[in-house]
Image 1 (cartoon, rainbow, N blue to C red):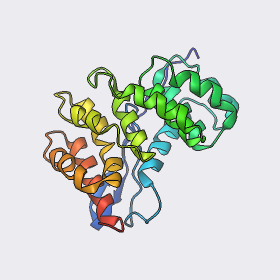
Image 2 (tube, helix red, strand yellow):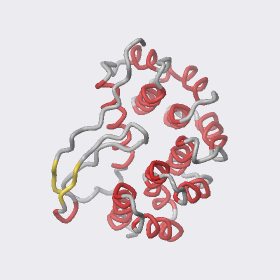
Image 3 (cartoon, rainbow, N blue to C red):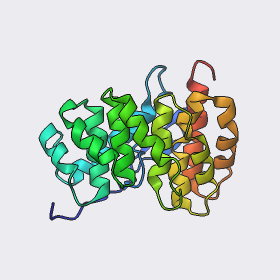
Length: 231
């Protein structure tokens, strides 16, 4: 892969969010977030926050000319750029490409960062829960300041019903680095789905954050809970 990866951030499109609030949709390659769906409240039984991550990954791949077919996606797992590797891993899991399992497991058990986390989550989506969870659990104790993948791993585990990453997200939200807090804040919605009461202090802390993106993610987590049957 000789060309440089295009970590595209969209110029933003205006739309009407919940309760008619205008929203700007962006793509951030440093996390598993992606453009939010606009319009009606979130339907029950649909994980639109997971869809956001898939949409972000597809945007990164499309910007770099990587087709959505299994062969080019698997080839992208060997790209020089970890953001491109992470995006490919995400979509191989989303599209349930079982032939990619060996390559994904090798990536998940490697020494990477966000690509490692996405590969672990992809294994879970392929039905290889033990292998995927083991890779993600191993990332939870990495320094959150140095590894954005630690927070992404915590969110992936939460999507799989495992709250082991709670402490990781708490540490990341306390970081002085806004980029670290942003990635952690994007995982809070998944912790909220597991235990809304326990997640409430995390949401409250994030809503009071000085960084606008962290605040936005906290609002989305609160809206997700409000739209749920228990909210």
